[in-house]
Amino acid sequence: MKLKVGRVFAREYLTLKRTLKGLEYDERKAPVLATTREGRERHRGREPATETPVESNAKILESTKELDIQDAHTAVYKAKYVKRILTYAGQDS
Image (cartoon, rainbow, N blue to C red):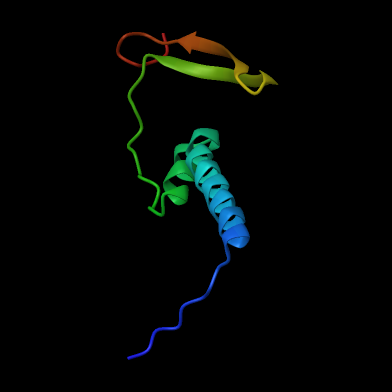
């Protein structure tokens, strides 16, 4: 049995190693930047989990989210919610 092995010279090997290291780093960042649970699950190669709705005593009328990236190490995430509070039984009063 013969195996075909590609030859890589020292200069090419160093470039290949740096490229693979960069790809691995980018791969680790992707789940952090995924915006939804479905996106993260798809990235990991799994089907998105189906969840049952949660019983709540509040209804979200409006939701606004803003991500401000200031530099490579700093980001500000702002979220604003407008809610309608229901009774403790979860019904409109």
